[in-house]
Length: 362
Image (cartoon, rainbow, N blue to C red; front, side, top):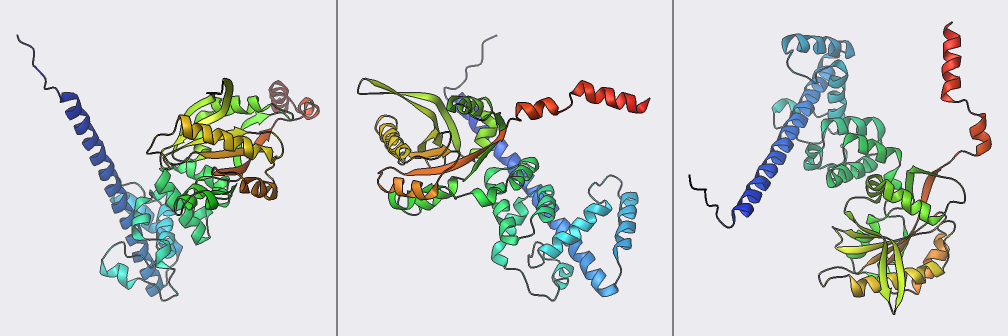
């Protein structure tokens, strides 16, 4: 039997079909999610209209949940709690026209509408239902909620990661780094780069004792690279640690080197323990110049420097950055500190706790 001769471009054909299948799967998932969100909003509109016309309360929702379970036992998502969420969801966004049915249009309450521009229908429909439930429960300020919606869609955050970002108050930290971007980069690039960086960064997955060395911090970040990248934000691709540069027959080493896939540039990160010092800016300016000369491609944007200190004095940072040529930001970072030995020795061990529990049951 003769072997089948494959065309020369068969590998490309296979890759192309796989990519098309995956894109179609993603589109199908998004379409299913959008229809679910429309359905829940529509049910919320219907219940809101009936409540206002007939004056019945939450007891009817409990009965409705039981009857729906009996009538449609194969359908999930119609518990009393979730139906109440549907009602709350509609009342949060009554101005949206997610469906064109008459009941939804007639159900619009007579009150001052929320600004439509805050929550376009495309954004609402792109969010999974579980994310909507968490945002309604935890974020009451509408502009802040919009920020987390947009960040979720842009970064593909799971519900757990969304909750982590809310707990870490990510919206307060984004774009807060001291920098010279406005003076060293053209608009809108300067705004985009500014919004990419945070202040402070929360490395709460690390526990270091007071007086730690910078190399310990660096080692810990690389050991938890996935969490580190999550805190840095979408687009950062790790290039190297202690990245070697040979300049003028001298050896220099970058603490951390990244490439940002959206900004299309290298990002040099210098880790410092303690307060920011003005000389750090000159050193980072030197590093960025070398990376621009030796690593940057013609299509790349200028290299960005990020100095991470425990206490970034904004006034000192702003003065220090005025005299440097390269775009540089200065941010702080926070760690989970190790317990002092005196406190550690006063805490009960697992064995002691188990003995206490066993003694209490006797």
